[in-house]
Length: 291
Picture 1: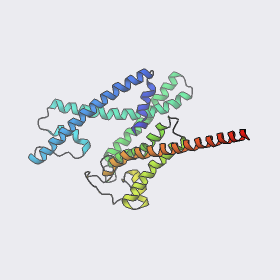
Picture 2: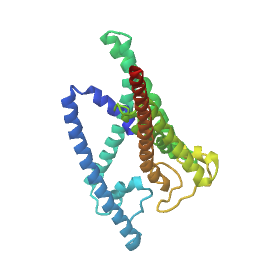
Picture 3: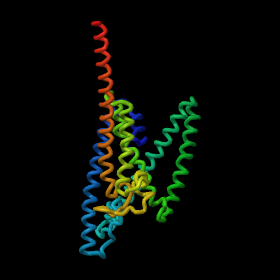
Picture 4: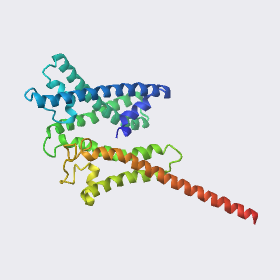
């Protein structure tokens, strides 16, 4: 879904020129990669410390409740200083604010584009933009506060991440077909075939796993809705969801392969059909010339 995230595309369109875009991309990608690597190493060490605490000194701290909270294991360590704790809290606030800011800015940028088309002068456009920011963000903040308190079995605090999973599973079927369409070899029908086969593959997976046609559609929600028989299997303690259920890693890895084969396979057949028709037409013209 991040490939279609408007927050990223807004930054692309905001670049001064192609040179600045490439420079920003390389610097940003390098910093993000380095930071992600450091977080990964830190979380591996913190997970090892959590295992040690549970096996050797269970009274020393609490176990990690879920994989996303691994980094915050540092707050549970007795040797963590107050300065480090404050840094972790500041980092958490910055990451949350950064995510919210990206989505909110992307939403308002889409609306602002429509405002610009109306041909308003600068002051009116600025005033309307500020009003739209308030209109978009206030309901979003109210919804976030309500979702945080809705902690029931089917509450928004639990299911909100599942909505992101649904967005991911749908959009990952679009990435290969859409971007392949920039190449002349790929035809419009080839792109459409790739998108269709991605969705069809998800449906077939759920159908085969549970033996019902309804389960195929439930798989579009990563088994979070529609199938009560979903149970944890293998290494993961989660029965559904986009990130930790056992089927998620397999689906997100194989869907790009399926869409790639369908997109380029159909495009190849369509191009070969066109080429054969051209050869037949040329041979027919040559035959008429001899006659």
